[in-house]
Length: 430
Image 1 (tube, rainbow, N blue to C red):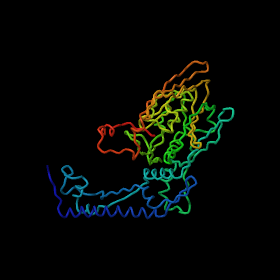
Image 2 (image 1 turned 60 degrees about the vertical axis):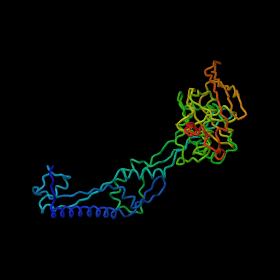
Image 3 (image 1 turned 135 degrees about the vertical axis):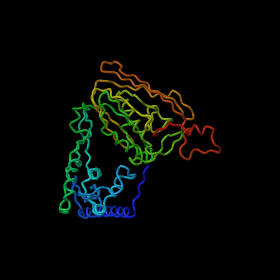
Image 4 (image 1 turned 120 degrees about the vertical axis):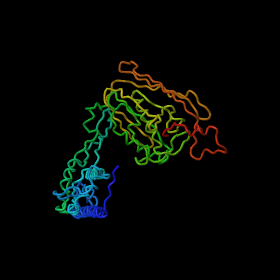
């Protein structure tokens, strides 16, 4: 291995040139900010926004480089072929006249990533969300638009990006009193007032109801928060609906509050407690409209909000889930509402002459400790009277005393089954 050392003179030259480059780069940044010191005013979706100097600085990509005269001589001492460092350093072994003629140059160009990030954040602040049509049922059982749909408005990111890339270069010449209007686009709703007939949403199919009377405030809040995720959901013919997938994330960042859930052999607070009121109500709506239930699990113990017992559906992310398949010939539209202490889900679509009956629920066993077993049967017949679906739903509930609420469980010694209880994986939103 060959080693080459720089003489003190060459070392001082290197530091002098590098220092000059750093100073030149910093001076260029300062001049760049000075050139765009005047705040830029934007108009977006009816909102006026003043962009600060610091924000505008993130819209630029700055670069700096060292240059040498084009007639520089041959290397004095260090050949690039044997240089133990970066070629950039070794290149300072040039003639003195060349080294002291080195100069730093800087330049800038609009940063597409910086401008795009600004526009996306601004769009989150000022965009107007579209409104889906809300349907209702008249006395003849026909569906009509109760609340018409409305288009939303959002910033056209690509067009605004092109505009700002051009304007940031000329912003020093613009008058700060003249707002720059950003292009916008219209965002359509998922369900328009005229979509009902096209998708086959012309009849009221049925509904499911549960009563959450006596629920704590956090539980009621979570019920209404989760309800919004299912408002206006459309399920295509033959499509399988997943409650967990439609629900999305459940935590404080997504607007949920802590409330009781059944988890690891206990009943304890966690974000989203009460969501099972929503899944249970949807389960009953699916049953009452003759849909094929493909996944459902009952709660660990009987919960008073879900009477009659045996017709509940617990969920927890990612499992257990509640799923059903749309067996009708057209789309199903889900509409939910809260009326006093009742949660109601109504299904709309196309009637095909089917009849649905529910046999039960029947309590098969019941113990003094509150544990029980139940069963009911869903029977669907077509317009010709032929049975097309017959499903039995059995539920086995433990005693509620096995799942103590906060403050109810006290020990004088470590329980023998403590490890098994702590390691249990069964969880569900009460």
